[in-house]
Amino acid sequence: MTEDDHRQQNRKAKHIREQFTQLLARLQTLPDPARARLQGELIDALLSRTVSIDTPRGAPSFVPFGRGGAKRGLTLLTKQPGTIEWIDGFRPNSVFWDIGANVGIYTLYAALRGDTSIVAFEPAAVNYFLLVANCEINGFDRRVQCLLAGLGRERALASLEVSQFSVGQLFSFLGKRDRRMQVGRRRSSSPSISSSRSTGLRARTTSRWTCLI
Image (tube, rainbow, N blue to C red):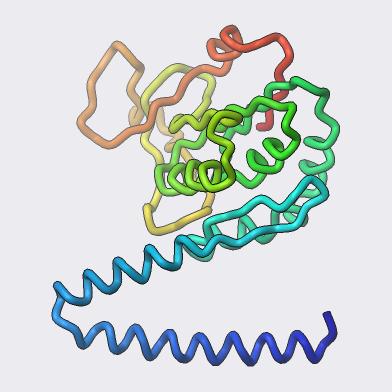
């Protein structure tokens, strides 16, 4: 693509942003019930417009939901080229654990192989939604098992620092032990995410497994 093409695309994108800003302003003039219905329709329409990324193994589609989710998909081949090379080197019939799968860019790339079983772990609900959605639109439901869970050194319930409005971002469990609850010992009313010991999960998988940490 030439520099003139880039400039033309930038001008077009700027014009669309200006129109989008005007649309948002007009939406605010509607009564809440009418705005809610129309806003919901617009979101559904935008989410149905997926984006495909060309790779040596095919062109997986991504749901461009939020800046973070869109950026994750667009940087599939460039964010961690070493990970892409590593996945390309999997032996046939490997089992790939994508721990902290986020929105699933490496899960999808591994699924394109067709000879690899994938278990994708993602504890943040906002990212898990996109992880499952991305697998669904690519028809990888049978090839990928998505789990809303985190993996850690102990079996426990732990608080996760997360915002449901920060799509594609990295989140962490709080490190203070007094904010955790050992499973089977105490109960807590605060929101929590399950975290299992990886050693216990490994025992229930095939001996041929590859784990991304």
